[in-house]
Image (cartoon, rainbow, N blue to C red; front, side, top):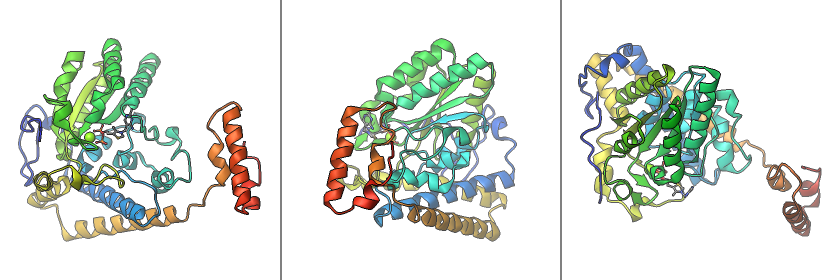
Length: 370
Ligand SMILES: Cc1ncc(C[n+]2csc(CCOP(=O)(O)OP(=O)(O)O)c2C)c(N)n1
Ligand SMILES: [Mg+2]
């Protein structure tokens, strides 16, 4: 297995929950008291529960597909909770914990994966674009948005989330060039979860991914992505640079995708279980819990409160998902093109005839969805 070295990543919390002092980084998280740490713990437990529930919903036939984030909770919560409401997120399909930080409604997380809507939410409601499935494309969108922020003279920041595999895409490299050229207020947040479906990161990156950014003129930080404190500190550093005219920053959060790429994938066919064991020992939630315990802040009340909240959120997610009404079959042709299109019209007519042949005339064809 080709694996890039992990040791040089910034770490503030060891896997067993010991705090490592770092004079350059510590001031960035000095405000986090026991209550704030407990909130981060709660967030990570809740998003893990959302992820587990959505995965179960897919296994039960209630969702067509789900891309799990198991193992990446610290990378997403640490960065997501560092953002201001007026910052703008451009993500891939896996950043459901970031969406949670932005205040997404639970049903908005699953409706696309259930196949009942073309889009999950209005991006301007939570200042987060809907998930981008075209690998890496969102880095260009974020950079363009950041140029707009710059033109407005605003101090908000655009942040693009993408994976290790995405760094091989032309889009990402073009976005880095543009961001550096115009010193755009954008953060490139790469979650190196070690896999791009079945391709190990070492195949695409023979050196740490963070090392590439300086070649584009963009400073980079490589952090332990399973250490919520290190991730939050790095994101705050990058946000501060961007807000004060310092331009783009690249963050590589070194983490691990503990589950399959999506529920349609079987990782046992391509990865060594030893790797899973190693990364299981670096679990982001267990290490924050251990640290909190050392501080005397991990009480039975906290554990109970968080577990009850996670259960309630899961119940709400499930109820909202399974009660979503099926769309009219013919609405699949809506919103494909802004203008009338002859191919789409022909397909709509063919499908109408097909539905009629099944005897579904009334429900299927009523109304004009154009
Ligand atoms: C442009 C493009 N090429 C290929 C794909 C198919 N594809 C979907 S996910 C994926 C791997 C992405 O890996 P990575 O960037 O590491 O993100 P991760 O899934 O690990 O979060 C690929 C190749 C795609 N969606 N878009
Ligand atoms: Mg990956």
